[in-house]
Image (cartoon, rainbow, N blue to C red; front, top):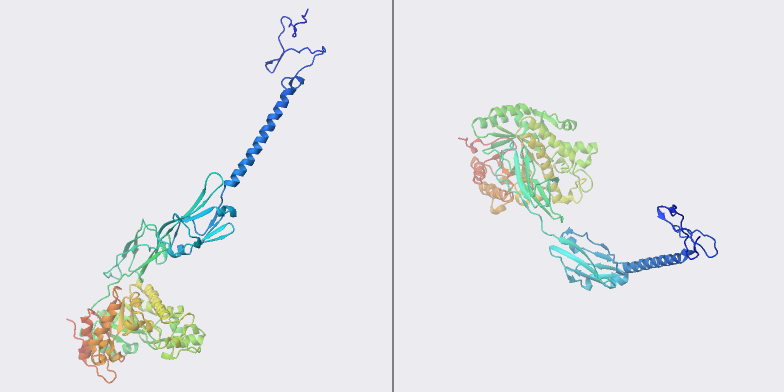
Length: 581
């Protein structure tokens, strides 16, 4: 029997309690009404567990309310403490030139007007003057007052926050107004025209290096340039620092020009004339001269030898008086140097042909659009086709054996430049004319230098003082030729020039004074001189052998051991030039 006082019935012997999921479950309890009701403890069902469910829901509700409150509070803290600034005006960490720094206009836009009202702006640690700022809504605009010195600078914005203290922002920039350093030792000693050349130097570390406009790498500033032969034009070396400051150096590589030249001018017609040619050959045989300057193209635009340049034949310029190769061979056999003279831009043949073809931009014009009349036509020295025609004649002459090309009329016509129109060139003036002539000489020497040919330019005697008035700026010309041939004829000076009372009757004094001025204005270029001297009578003054010799003496006393004699008729005074020892 089962005792009524025992709530749990006694298990029969040998039976074990029921088991579910490895947990021991109590036996079914008795209920007051005597019916048995199973309680599922694992699922929490049954009236026995109802209070626990009410407790669990309360906890969950409290957790949710806490999370919502925390989220709202965090959002409120974020919104009330966060400061965003939209900044423009310069890049943080930028390197600026002084003029760029002076033009700074910094804009600082905050989210709200309230934050802007709680903001303070400082520059280099000092509060910004109100006069330097402008307020517009939530935006602060700042412009620096006065010049900003070189060095590091900082613009700082501080905004007071309702919680967590102040919010601080800063932007820095550096001002650099110092040009970068470029060190290149000058090449003072002339080199042979065939020798390789090395140019070494150093630029400021961190600067970009450009050579003749092309970027070049360098090792912490050190660089070396190597050339197979001397460069034809000045080497342009430029350093640009991070701020954009630039420093440019031009290095001229002078070449050794032969000395001891004693020469005379010969036209194509003169070489083809037995009497005139033999007179010059006699001076050669007597040891009086060792150089002949022979016309390739003359003042009329006539090409006097058997040229094969196509353009020369197209315009009817070729009128052969001699064979250039034969002439060079004959003179070289006598140990004579041959210079090819080309009259560049005074060219009536080309001017007439280009005008007739409709290529009027190849010809200088009058203001009314008609062809420039002086010299029967003067070609446009800025036009590529005109330049190329002359260069083609020059390279052909070098291939035939001449050692030099001596340009003549490499200038504009003398006179009022406002009465000349150069097609295709804007803002035409003396400076523009000079740049065009120099650019032609730069290009022509670039063609001749690989051929190991020298380039010279005949210039007015007054060019040392007034070369810019005829597009022959002396120093600029000196930088793109190997020698200058100043036409210092005493008869072509006005009385009183260089303090010489009568230049035509004082040949020594005027030649000495003129060459001294040329040496002064071209100092440092390494250019050589081969002066043109007068061996002709003019203005009723008969030039004697003594007057010719006086010019030669003045030239040599200036340290110049080269000269060329000019006589348009090619009749020279042998006794003015003593035989060389």
